[in-house]
Amino acid sequence: MKASLVILIIAWIAAVGTLVTDILGYTHNLAMFGRSGSVLTLCAIVLEYKLSTKGQNDSTYKEGDPISLGAVGKAVLLTDSEKRMRQFAHTSVILGTLIWGFGDLVGKFINS
Image (cartoon, rainbow, N blue to C red; front, side):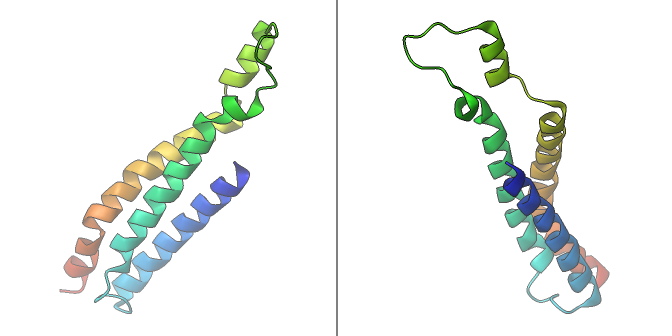
């Protein structure tokens, strides 16, 4: 899960970098900022998936054995840092989708 978070942060850095190169005109014809939105969205969705399957991966329950309420809570509930990661991933999916859809327009408006 930590690796997915690091990759998402790198995707954000790449998105900001491509925004700068589009504004400066280096990659204006390629519209790299808009394309970086798809990578950002994909990385955010992978992090959300990792968070949603956390309970399945952390479970030590064996079929047929009794299960305690503490084990259920551990499998289902997110820690505070995981909740912050989930919020960051949700925001990244939304903003990445907007960048993906409309990011090419940024370079067109600034360089025209």
